[in-house]
Length: 253
Image 1 (spheres, rainbow, N blue to C red):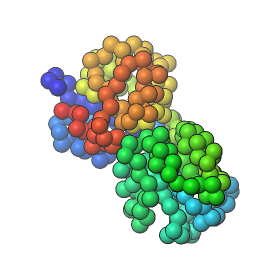
Image 2: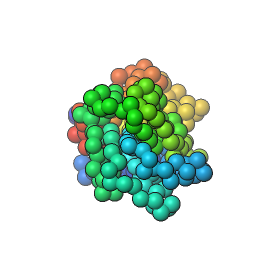
Image 3: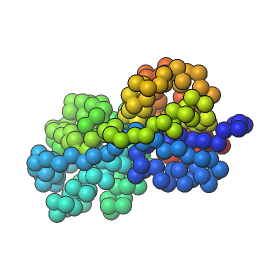
């Protein structure tokens, strides 16, 4: 891509953006981090009770890096250990990598990093007497839970964290850049980042018009995120072949 822009807007939460922004800077880009998500762990007695019985489950399914991090943080805080014979299913290489940090190996990782592919992977497994735990955010999709509930003895969807809009955001600088159409790329890592991006900016800026008319290239990591982008902005984004940050980096040049 040949242009005079060298700015990339990163909308993921601050804690997860450092490695991505560093690699963008190495490619010669200026990064503007505008976190649209704040990850807040949920603490309550129901979660603690469920985790205390974690070894009664046959499968644990992780669909995000945050779910793995918070799940194991909670287990450590409760001084709980997981049996090595529990099976894990993960969506995506980043989730796989995070699970392996805790010395567990996944039994299932689908070729495509989407819920539908994970369900396809379970088609050949008899779940009729199995218990499945899905630690996730409050706004996670119901697809996996709904479909596996039709096949398994028990499926427990455990909300262990919230995806919230950051309360304090200084958007004046961002608005200036948007009005000048100064970004070469704008990146989204999840459906909630798109929802929050819209909800934060819509009261002060015609963000839908901007997206439709902008020269910026909009990149969504994965088909689920892209679907949400189309729903909100009625525009086709770019999707990397690999649904990981390296896939986005391959598109940015």
